[in-house]
Length: 501
Ligand SMILES: Nc1ncnc2c1ncn2[C@@H]1O[C@H](COP(=O)(O)OP(=O)(O)OP(=O)(O)O)[C@@H](O)[C@H]1O
Image 1 (cartoon, protein in one colour):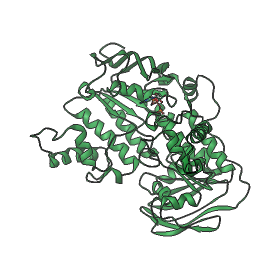
Image 2 (image 1 turned 45 degrees about the vertical axis):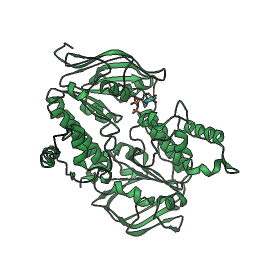
Image 3 (image 1 turned 30 degrees about the vertical axis):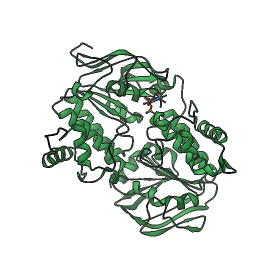
Image 4 (image 1 turned 90 degrees about the horizontal axis):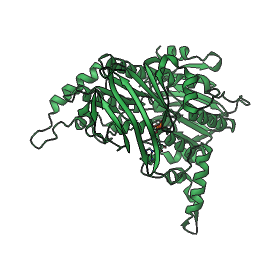
């Protein structure tokens, strides 16, 4: 690649946390107009590399060139150098409105004598959202939006930086589609193609390899902080990518669901209504894995909160093992034996300021008190054991959640709920942000939980996962159950058709 063709050149990048090397002599080249996949298992160093490019972290050594300009390290004011990023953690302030969040990120009205120009900001962002076909109210609070809308807004914000006077040209997307259904992910992928076609360099970090293959030109694979492969995407396939990530051959990416032994109903949901969900009925048997899906906004993403007491239903009933359960509060769900993995781990379900131990033992803390004293070492040993069950290495329970990679945070959340051996396990996008190998491990655990007798409800926009893992899948349209597809008839095409019917 000549100087004129390169959007980004990274040479010999080194980064360490507390003396532990996490990026080791990393080279990366991204051309103008190219979409470049940055791939690797959870914790392989992808996000850290991006954070070095944006100045969040100061690398120990290395060189970074953007469009032929050598950037002194640590990078300062990445946007001014033309680098726009959508991070996994969007950093939006939940209590502020969409407009306030977007405006704050580009510094409107930041000076003493430059008041916030609400009308102008509204106009600019309305036009950007309209351009992308997004119907997100600018005056809604971020906290009230779905995870998918928030992901889209993060792209809008980065796009605005690219369009701004800073004139950004290198667009980095760190798992922008992780919480999105297929149709919504397509919007983001389409946006990436447009940005690349305009001559920008695009780095795409994602674990959904189908998306990577559909949109990327070249790929670089990191393993334990080192580049183990870099080249055209056409030279790779699903298996070879995963082999590069793992450094060894892998088996299937999905386990089969367990054989169904009995037709005993574990959970019966009858005419449940609340939020966008209307008169939703579903029965799931012991050992059964049932998927719920739909296009964004069709109500499937609101079902988990109704089933776990996070949102009080307006009407309808839920029975577990023939006994009615009242779901007014999350504690009601836990008491009834309902476990829940939330789709948005940073906002719900995870205490990000806490350690892995504090997160893991929260639901069972009383077990570790003796004579009014917390037996910290027993608690810590127990937490380490749980980390081992999800093969999280290193199994260091005292580490802050913020220092775990996104996929490893998801593993901690899984272990937290799985330890309670729920009789109904409601999983909302359980493998989002998890690499294919760790995803397989989590899915094995899901199957094991079903084999142990739980009714598993898998709410997901990942059609491939639903097809492989579920005994049947129900599709929601306009808040109600529209179609039910048995395993024998399940295919991604069938699901897509049912969702868009
Ligand atoms: N602030 C931090 N302090 C200490 N260690 C960190 C910190 N941030 C990341 N790490 C460690 O650096 C390594 C690389 O993490 P990074 O988040 O870059 O991985 P990743 O490839 O982006 O993973 P994922 O796909 O799960 O997002 C991991 O071992 C992680 O635990």
